[in-house]
Amino acid sequence: MPHSPSQARRVLAGFALASLGNGLTLPFLYVYMAQVQDLGSSTAGWMFAWMGLIGLAAAPGVGALLDRFGPRPVLVGALAVEAVSIGSLGFVDGTVPTMAVLAGVVVGASPLWPGTTTLLAAMVPVDGRERAYGFAFLGLNVGIGVGGLVSAFLVDVDRAETFQVLYLCDALAYLAYAAVLVFLVRSPASTEDGADQEGTGGTWGEVLRDRRAVALVGCGVLAVTFGYGQLEAGATAYAVDVAGVPATALGWAFAANAAVIVCGQVILLRLTSGWRRTSALACAVLTWSLSWTVLAAADLMPTAGAIAAVVIGLAIFGLGETLWAPIVTGLANTIAPDHLRGRYNASLGLTLTLGQILGPALAGTLIGSGLGHLWALVVIGGTLTAGLVLTRLRFLLTEAEDGAAPQAETLREPVDVAAE
Image (cartoon, rainbow, N blue to C red; front, side, top):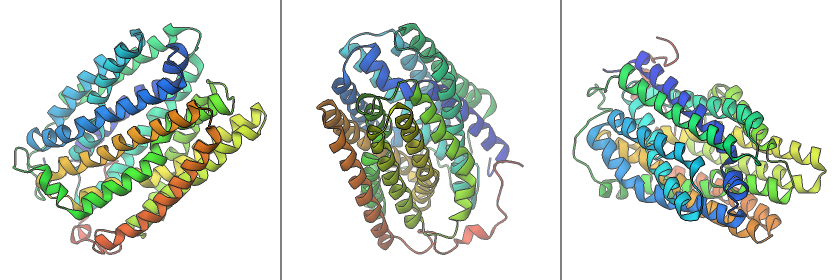
């Protein structure tokens, strides 16, 4: 099935459905654990770190499974695990049971982005992949934005049953993506450019011997620790516990974040199409530094101003996201050998999980200890540092890999994943 835009559109639609369910619960996971389950802010922060540890342990297996069996069967199995786990989250009580269910949530979620991007790599030509990843990230955030708006009206921290309904709806959304993959998407055959070579040999040792891959993961961990790793735990904890923003306002903040991505995704990718990939990634992380600066100012304002600062801060964060996700995924797939594509995509998931070990632990420790302002200074400085480090990554890449020169494949007629 070489270069099938209709199949790619189905994958993108299914992924957006799963994201819609995720949006129902994403803004309130910290609030649910800290206030509804009454675990406290510090324990809730460490729960996010626990999720990162499970993701770290799962990442090598995810990459190997994707390369061995192909992305479609791995995704279907993972979605089933995710549906059962997230559906159970609203019905558990206590630290240990919550840790057990969250482990299942992470194991089920770990293959979703790398599996989807690996699947898309087999359905579009090389020059169309970054655009396809942009549409995938767009669908992710449309789902999160709509879900966040819906949940903002439904959630009530004094009624645990409202969270139970949200988690069950999230489970149904993951099952919907699984149904799309089972009934509407075919497993890709080997393509002309080798984008999907199921069952071929390959090891993580080959990935570790690639200095480009190791450097990309290292830069990604630094960026995610002070960026994405703070979005669910640090930013929400600061807004609620330090700035005194009502929990229901978080849904609007995440909706604003998603709205910026939806409106700006295609435009920003087009505006930066002539940039080096490393420059665009550095710009993304520096934008996150500005976002945390605005968010930090929320504690200096009355309630209305604080809510506005949180909403604007997360909206600015979305500008950086429009560049980060598709470009870093495109870079990983550019340097990846065909038989290791699953592992290279899984390595990007590794940057997220490592960042989610360090980031939430940092946020839980500082904010939980009453050092919210120090947290703000640390994440602002950390994202500034990550942006500077990313500019040095270009010295390990060729001109074509960094996007400064066209690759031979870009001379072909591009396939539009949005329309056949």
